Image (tube, rainbow, N blue to C red):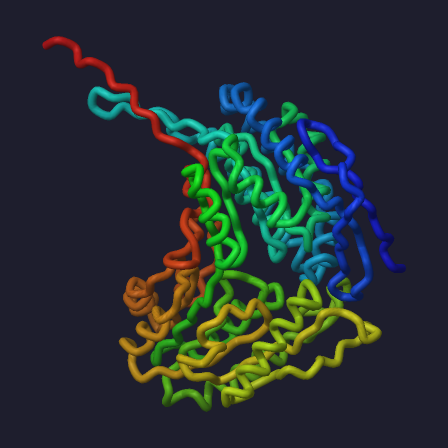
Amino acid sequence: MTPSMTVYPAHYINGQWVKARSDETLPVHDASTEALMATVPAGTMAEAEAAVLAARAAFDNWSTLPVEIRAACLDKIAAGIKARTEELALAIAREVGMPLKMARAVQVGGPAWHWSNFARVARHFEWEKKVGNSLVLREPIGVVGCITPWNFPLSQITLKIAPALAAGCTVVLKPSEIAPVNAMILAEIIHEAGLPPGVFNLVNGLGPVVGEVLATHSEVDMVSFTGSTRAGKRVAELASQSVKRVALELGGKSASIILDDANLEAAVKGTVSACMLNSGQTCSAHTRMLVPASRYGEVRELAQAAIARFNVGPSLLDTSKLGPLVSATQRDRVLGFIRTGIEEGADVIAGGAEAPVVEHSQGKGYFVQPTILGVKPDDTLAREEIFGPVLVVITYTDEDDAVAIANNTIYGLAGAVWSATDEHAAKVARRLRTGQVDINGGPFNGQAPFGGYKQSGNGRENGVYGFEEFLEYKALQFKPAAS
């Protein structure tokens, strides 16, 4: 049975659903079938401003509530997410394309954990500290505008809104217009949690309309943005006019360095998996695999075997390991990159630009073959973020060469090093100009800081590091007691 199409007619402003002022809507398509699955209203500048003013009016009360009250609200939201896991997972599997089983665990399970974790962080945080004759206070920065992407939509919303609310900030969210359905469900959950009016607001719409209001409005104290580096530069430029704090989580071109002493099979398999998660639509994906030149032939065979496990299929099919891309635009962009790589002389190890054979798709869906290409360090595909299921293999001569290639990028978000020992891998990892490095397949840690160097952005997410992004320092100076 084909799921029905849902019409969302309102934005969430000042604690209630407010019917959109404009009749213009934004379509949301099922990535596997191309069918229209929902519409959301195209927000106006006036609606965005109304949300900002509601957040400003709510700030004084929310910011001065006891921490335990705010933390308890976050716990209620976490419980609400868990209770609606299936609904959220289905929405994200359809609008983003991640297979349902994985969407349930990663795209919903992760955010539920983070909401609870930020409640714990707030409860145990040191809000005041004596430093000499000063009392140093941590206080919420104010009204936060949150602009979020489509690839991990609920996760990226959570990593902004949860710590901001826990810190005492009020927020206005503009979710991605490509994958907004999960945000609408979250707004329902937040409403049911009973937050005071104006503490959380959601306005759907386009970046040049709603997003630019959040970046420029004088009553917004901070803007937190996740998306492309190009769009991030625009947000930072606009926000600079009112000297807002800006947190940016942007693109990446992360390198996985396989050292000569590594377990080659495990390293290749792990790198392929780290690249293909969410069909490669991951800013921290390990999209460059750096291997010793003398072992390229072995790597080639191992990569072919590893990629063969990633069968492509509709996101709601249990057997699908790799779903479609999010949209026709994204599919065509990725195919264009693959064709460019082949034109530049890439060695086609696996995949290519031809449409994959996808069972149960009826010829629909934004599918791309999982592709591995051998390229040179200066080739287009070695430099540009592709944001699709495309891994490039680059050879190096020695460790110094590997580090130089890895660092020769405008980005610096993530990476990996594989070696026979953690000590050897860590020694190389310390030389990489990037925000996070996996050592021999070390798993993601939701308490560790996540964010990038260089044009991958500024600021950090996760745990106490992400929480502190939404706080200001204040120092109270006391006159020392007479001796």
